[in-house]
Length: 485
Image 1 (cartoon, rainbow, N blue to C red):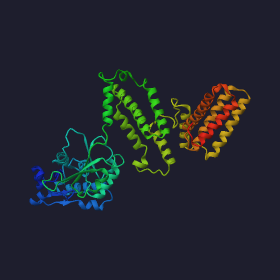
Image 2: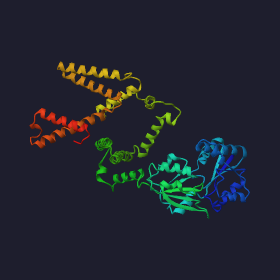
Image 3: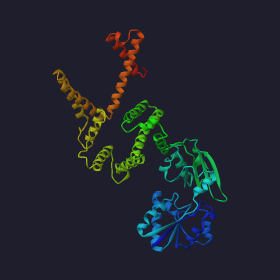
Image 4: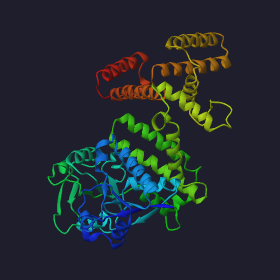
């Protein structure tokens, strides 16, 4: 069986390369390097070890993922044709080396065995330079994988492969979405080398202006947040433990239902208020309800928080094949149709695409059912049909009222409200929120009238309807002019 040796060259200093690594490189028929830009290669030249570096592949590929795939393919083919080969990388092979991951995954299928020759990683060298204790949580991120830079706000962050100012600038812009401009960034060049080391700490907004950025540079950022989801889960476990809180221990899924509903509505209130601070706080309270329920489920052996995350993550990927797969969706309408079909395929035991979710308030239930019907084409071709239906239902309600048929009045009033919800959908207005705003508007005007009556000394019941209407119109004018009531 052919073999690939995956060799670590150490963090930089030739003396950091292990004797085992050197011996392995000597006996391999072919030696390949991810990059020739590494101080440790002086030792290879001293021992007359020939090698081929893949630096040119970085320039000839459209993406870094393509580069790593090409490197892995080249090494696997070489092992198949030339017997034992070595693929050597800076640091240690299992630390942030994407091509190594691909080789380890694909080589066995090609009948090739892999043998990892570890070495001192760049993490050890960086930790010694900045006195980063091993008991601290840290994350290692490739600067070329920008989408991962914001994943670890509660951890010490090490960013590698920011090999020039352009990459450093891209990293800075991405980090700036989460980290403040003055967040400290330590720039370390040549960690682990006996000479040529440089280090400086600058605010985030200056990190790409450091002059000595090159392929031996690493960025270190301390945590931007003190707490992560892991600690929140840990706190909830403590609250539910025998040493925790008596009230928290007494709760179950049923007793928590009112709080879940209350917190959801408080999130809506925060959105309506326009206060980002308030919204942040209320979303935290809502998240607590999710964590609370997941802990109760964990204690019952049903599921855990990570099962919730796993499930929703897989669902999002599965229901967005136009993003994560090969499907196409040009419009939001295409997305909704695809979403509904995928849902039906997922739940084959369900006999219908449509659900009547009786736990929802009637207005929300009507909106959701109408959206489901529309997603499969059962809808008016345009809003004219919806307006005509609204007129029709109003006339039928008036007829029922004139006939003094109470049962018919209830039925026709329901039909009128349902038709009004349909209009809101065509107008792209959330009926629940629209009604909430109108209710609040009515309340504010009513309070204005009440205060006017109280200030006159009679109270609201002591004035004629015409006087109350006068104050009502006054409240309307003030509201329309933007004045607070």
